[in-house]
Image 1 (cartoon, rainbow, N blue to C red):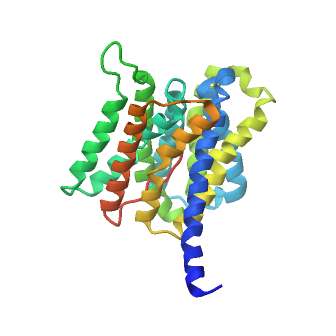
Image 2: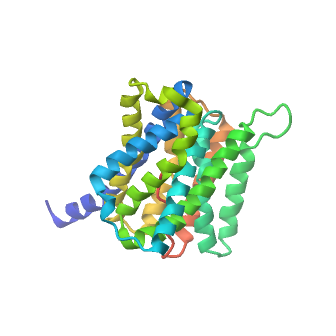
Amino acid sequence: MNTQTRSLAATLFPVGVLLIAMASIQSGASLAKSMFPLIGPEGTTTLRLLFASVIMLLLLRPWRAKLSASTLKTVIIYGAALGGMNFLFYMSLQTVPLGIAVALEFTGPLAVALYASRRPVDFLWIGLAIAGLLLLIPMGETSKGIDPVGASYALGAGVCWALYILYGQKAGAENGIQTAALGVVIAALFVAPIGIVQAGSALLNPALIPVALGVATLSTALPYSLEMVALTRLPARTFGTLMSIEPAFGALSGLLFLNEVLSLAQWLAIAAIITASVGATLSMRNDTPPPIAAD
């Protein structure tokens, strides 16, 4: 293998890994939605986070992390944001197609990127994002727009995603990947009471274990690991740009696995939000954290 071929392979490998991670996350979301009729989005979020906690505790052994009082506070906020993001995102999937929910949620990291890079061209990205959102909002009594309650849940998940990025960067500065395991455990502790109250004894159904393990693996353990591989081999700007196409993965996953057919206006809305995310990522400052996916 010559030098040029090796260089091409070294470039394509992390890109391929990141694409697999995004496909894994959205496939996991589709699988999770199949559990809603049995235990609801609250119970599904609870099982996902509980099983993901077990997997990540075994793999990463976060008890070895060194936590000061200040770091512990940051990790708790990070974990709470992670739990809120998962919970609100799954709540939105009750009434909003997967691709649209991901696009609305992506306004969180988009806002982080725009806040860090206040240049004239950013008004273009803001305008595109607003145009995408307007295309998704029901206009008039006869309009077939998305459910406003579900859209609010997705936008709330976006706020949590923004907090996840900001506090995850601070929390991870001292303990790296172990912070992710701590965050998942804290997220499970925050969400579990809600899931237990809502789903009750249905959470103990043994038939749910294989599906819950699949969701935890596809949505958390596998993509987190793959993203870490990509992060160490890609510039932050490239990573963020590639992550911006995740709403398209969500839309395709919803179409393939859930038969969620979107209208032309909805596809245009997703395209506008993707374009705004890509543009904002390309124009952001070098010290801005990339929008790591954590659905």
